[in-house]
Length: 322
Image (cartoon, rainbow, N blue to C red; front, side, top):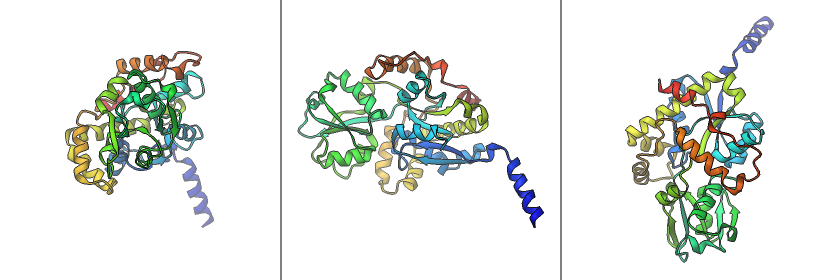
């Protein structure tokens, strides 16, 4: 018996690192009502397994927590804000590689109390955000500035995830916030609330790549096969959802039984052109996003400029395309 135990232990030690689960850190407590859901649903529908990788989803709250988890080794890949990733690389705080963007432009809208007629009237009000530095915080500041709002006259209050921000707005704890169109359309009641900036105007004011999946440079080397498999699986799921919206609806009914099917069908139509079937890391869009962030106040003390070619690795997307 002792010899058998020794043999088993030696076999376990000899197993390659790739046998370990590949952990993806995500910032949503549950499957989100946006195209970023492809990360979750690729697991539910078996796309990762078909690609040959054992994936484990690690859920945290917002991008800063995801960065901390990635840095501490609690995961191999993280879905985080583009701006935060760029800052980490530019400050030489982490060596990251951007490998895919399942939902490059989160479909945000800005909603507020009904007595607020337009964005300009937000001055002097409380604007709820996920966290200081979160994707919605950075992008909403850009949008509001573009719309002529003096953001220095707003109070940005960290509240939490979109659903929590919507609840806080409905309860009168904040005056306005940015949430995904999915959160807005599935609110139990919109009484007393008003849509201030719709999805199209929000994106037009800040047409940026807002989120992407990153791995450390070390992981890109030591677990390249797993990274490639994850990218392949997410791409396959996104392409299938684009071809067959009902596939997404059916999967979401299981993942989010709290949402009515008819509401999911409305969202499926809204996302008809939002699925990132080519990986979401277009070179021109990467350059535009980089320029926009470096012109923002959040980047005024960044020590150096980092170009997309310095940290974006499209080789995994290109390999999956073949």
